[in-house]
Image 1 (cartoon, rainbow, N blue to C red):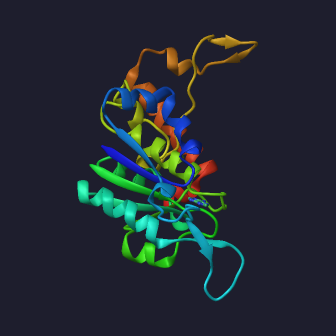
Image 2 (cartoon, helix red, strand yellow):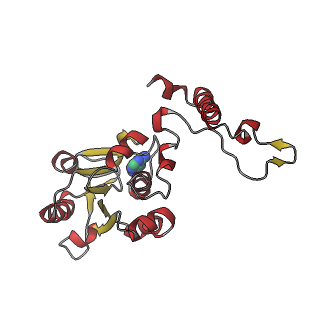
Length: 225
Ligand code: ADE
């Protein structure tokens, strides 16, 4: 998979890709991540990427021209499956969207800033708009990092143990069950006995019940879906 991220703040975005699972995925060539600084696609001395809104109103709007130049250059080099715009009014990110995107070959992620991009960018180039939740960030960069993390860990081969993504919360619309490790008894707080039974069907049944119970208590909306 190849991900091209268009941003005015590449430095804000780089560090999540320089540690742990994302770093290893890049080193293992399971994913390529490229950053494009929008200011490199401007033509004036001030490297202008935004301007005032037509019709008045507070906040600057990102110009279509540098974005068009950057996206057109990328598209002239390869086919892209999606051009994603990070925005609070997009579809809220969930595990299903992450699963679907993890199967794509090439995607572009456009990070918004200020009030956002000129509507014509969305109309002309964007194929999918994603929000990471009902709150407003200063820019799309942190949202893009969240999206990339959720997607990249699902690419086959990225997680050491292939089954570990399958047992995450939200796969099958259930939250994950409680998990335990050493010690067996911590100041009287004991690990459930069933986990030592060696009876794997019984353990699996317990985990399923716990996952259901937790989902019912915390996220009953998931059970309605
Ligand atoms: N940009 C600003 N707020 C955002 C959000 N909640 N999700 C994605 N991108 C954003």
